[in-house]
Amino acid sequence: MSETLQAGTSGSLAPAMEARGDVVISVSNLSKTYATGFQALKNINLDIRRGEIFGLLGPNGAGKTTLISIICGIVNPGAGRVLVDGYDIVRDYRKTRAIIGLVPQELTTDAFTTVCSAASLSRGLFGKPSNPQHIEKVLRELSLWERRNSMIMTLSGGMKRRVLIAKALAHEPTVLFLDEPSAGVDVELRRDMWQLIRKLRDAGVTIILTTHYIEEAEDMADRIGVIHKGELIVVEDKVELMRKLGKKQLVLHLLEPVERLPGELSGYSLALNNHGNELVYTYDTQAGRTGITALLTDLSRLGIRFNDLHTKQSSLEEIFVKLVGDRQ
Ligand SMILES: Nc1ncnc2c1ncn2[C@@H]1O[C@H](COP(=O)(O)OP(=O)(O)OP(=O)(O)O)[C@@H](O)[C@H]1O
Ligand SMILES: [Mg+2]
Image 1 (cartoon, rainbow, N blue to C red):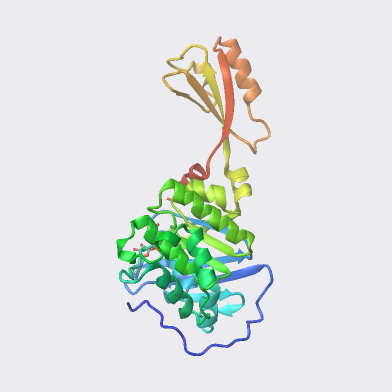
Image 2 (cartoon, helix red, strand yellow):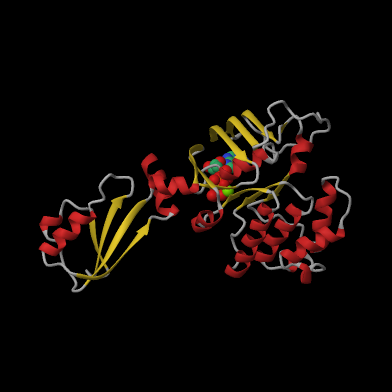
């Protein structure tokens, strides 16, 4: 546990001068090398805006949990500086921890505690006076109220994960980190969970989440950051990211299946799908000319007819694979 920080005993109460209204977390030049000599983060610079949902994506081992753990004060930062609401995470540890709620990736076990007391205790740890109404509200919203008197060890994995969320919300944090919150949570509960997270956002809570379900980030996030091998390779407004990197595809449903594409079409980026029944044309939405008109003219000339067509935008997952692929 040499990486674990102990709670600081002293801390300045005055926010640093850098505190700015629109930025709630400011990470500058942050690097982290573990005791093993492995460099998990390389010069990360990132500002999280107040009230946004920020999606942090990256393959296994990219450094997402390391980054979150440093901001939350669980792992020692190496070089660099992190401010939360203007407070330094090292110097003003207690202050920054009180602002933050963390739903950790790993299921931690307080097996012999009940759901309700785990949440209440967690609130107490941050020095907040007890507030049974708040705890009840949180447990109800997470569909845990019926199980409030159950020992945590008797709960299912998905319920245990929701207990972690309840614990993170118990002290009413204004910044909430969720590290893979939906792992092991079934579809219906996942939907409820996202609804709750949206509600928190609407109430002004800043949310930073990592997820392997890219469609969740696509649904939920206002901005996306992609981390790869310890480097933050992209931070972008989600809509802008999709617009910049998104390719569109035109899918033509052919009247008769085609076995092989005629050589005359070799200049187009085409693929035959669905046993030759679908012709898929990929084009760049940013290009001056999409080439669609020319393609349709050529198809008509070659006697390739279709009875339906639609377009689709590439998903964040495809964009992500491309981003990471380009860096390999
Ligand atoms: N305590 C540690 N000591 C040494 N190396 C570590 C430690 N914790 C993490 N690492 C290494 O740092 C790298 C980043 O790990 P991290 O857990 O931050 O990745 P991640 O992006 O959260 O991955 P995942 O998607 O699997 O959760 C990995 O190569 C990991 O093996
Ligand atoms: Mg992780």
